[in-house]
Length: 148
Length: 205
Image (cartoon, rainbow over all chains, first blue to last red; front, side, top):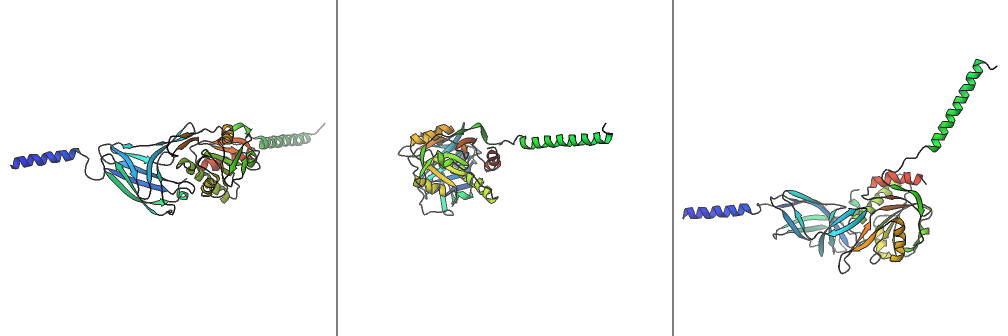
């Protein structure tokens, strides 16, 4: 009986070890969410997201309670032409980072209440392909604070 | 027969005159430094006639460029990234010039999305970046007269239910006070590039 229980427990332990390790697989830093320019309706998000696990992680969506819709996009500058393309899902390789920055990948964030101004608190939630999520808190920033 | 002393004095005066002449020639004809980041056209090109509107709803034509320097960027207000970033960089460059007591060219945002960018929308948008910025919009026919002259590409891309983007050239065109296309800054843009090269471009006219 003890032997069977031991084997069962060992089996469960091995199965757990083969899945994603305990603790947050994703960490997010350098978050900047810029207010919409008046006349525009889109806030812009930049950040760095790191996969700390030993397996790829796929971000399948991004949401925020302050916005009706959040999308991942990328600016592609080629031969002097700027094109913006949607990123339906984002694969982050194991132990790797992906940067969302000006002139490159960015979040387009729609539907912010027009009364919301710079300094207001925001929550952004990154959803992965295994129904996991990472939630972060930040504040809305004025575009005049953007570095050169 | 001139004395040795007279010959020496004559030689010195001749040498001094020749040296001074050479100095003056080099001072007024020395090659001017070239912009490092902007590209000057081999010869400035007169813009064609066109008829657009500014963000106050007033006519914006070739004559609107006359009498002052202008920096022209083509973008649209639904652009979340490179368009506001470029305007912010131009605004920062403007602020640096103004802080030094220097004039800065007028900044003109020409919309490549006239369907959504009305004069009212542009007025609110450009005001965010400070003074000296004009938004311009109008019919596609008239817009294409200006974009063709400046080598600007633009095309709607993707999106449903009005949720489209516009692919567009990212250069900043420099227009001189004679309404001529004179130089171009190519992306990726940096504030220091505008600050360093604009005086050289302006002095070259």
